Structures are given as C-alpha cells and as structure tokens.
Image 1 (cartoon, rainbow, N blue to C red):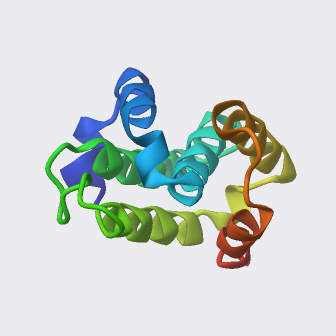
Image 2 (image 1 turned 90 degrees about the vertical axis):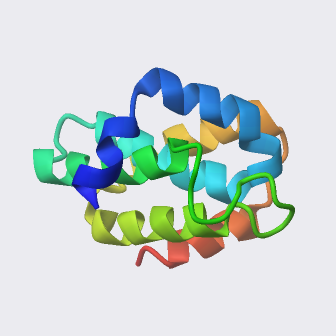
Image 3 (image 1 turned 30 degrees about the vertical axis):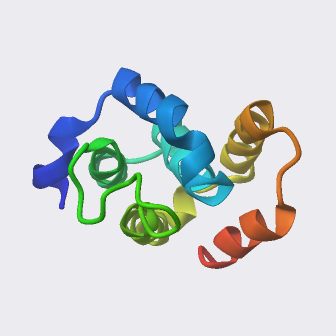
Length: 126
C-alpha cells in the first residue's frame, strides 16, 4: 500500500482536502485522519509506522478512489476503511496526547462533536 498512495501525500494537500470535504466526510472520518496526522508528527513514531500513515493519508487525498467521495452516505466508506486499517496497524502510536490534539482540532472545526462516534472509532483501535 505504501508505494501506491504515499506519493499523493503532502501536508498542504491533506489540509486542503480536509477543508473541502470535512462537513461531507463527517467527524468520524476527519477524526481518523487527524489521529493519523498527529501520530505521524510524533518524533517517537518509527519511520515504518510513518510510511503506513503517509500511504493511508495519500489514499484519502487521492482525488480518484474506489468510491467517489461526493456520493452521499457511502462516498467516504472506502476512505474510512483504509484509515481504520492504518489505525489498527499503528494503534500503539495513538497516545493520549495524539487523541487530545485530534479532538481539539475537531472541536475547532465542528464545534460540538458526537463523543459516542469518536469513542466507537477509538474502541476499534483497542
């Protein structure tokens, strides 16, 4: 997976994609992206783990993915699947600090967030 999608990743592209799709993607997808992003920024995370993260984020950024992102309800299901897979692979790198940074950014963008949705995602990492 790393070779195919990592070339699509850049921090600028990630923020542009999030800015343009955050409302339609929903808080669960955005939270998964933010968890990966902040884990990648952690200096204690290995290069191998960062490569997994970059590939997943590259897939998210890629404008042509398996299911067109603007399709209501299902458009981000493939993205979420890839993000969840990556999160499961790097779950030991999702520290309380990473979660806190992701939640703060999510609050900035969405205001009040559905805690049960976020907890459901976090439970999948355990």
